Length: 256
Image (cartoon, rainbow, N blue to C red):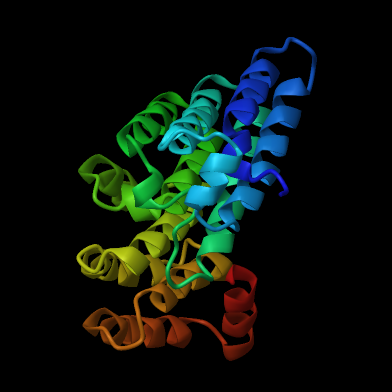
């Protein structure tokens, strides 16, 4: 029987730790990228059966423990690492997010059931947002959005996303729109607040058509039959009226 990812979790955690501690240039990024590929592989595998536990001599809960060790090490790397390391960490979680958003019932490595203490992940990334430069804040916002399933209920993270929507920095607004869209998909009570703010964003003459269309793209994540979607449609119509049809269509396509 081929070795499953759960049986390799301890080995992968140790290898990631060695890579992050290495002083060899580029080794930390390489270790993060390798871990990302492994997590994607693990994410697509079913839960290990009792037979698999017996074959690979797995203790109940062992794979979950080492999975959380890996996730925490990636969050620590994002907190203390340089630009290249932070970008690599974001790519790992963004790739996992893109994979699981196509699944109706998700039970993979980033599911709530697998998380031991998601608050610790959020704390580490929030430190970067609070103390970092513009690019660091943008990367942190993307992570918050990629973790929407468990970050959506955190009041501090909600405030960060909403306050970033009115930032004077275009990159920060765009990243916050991404995060807001992710939150709207999972939190119905978050969407009405965003809808109150979006008309001011899409009507702003100071923002590019691409960025304003990014605001319109948030509506697609509110659900087709919810009251939020109906209100979103009205705001979306307002956006279309502020752009010529060709510019609007191109801008929306670029945001998808």
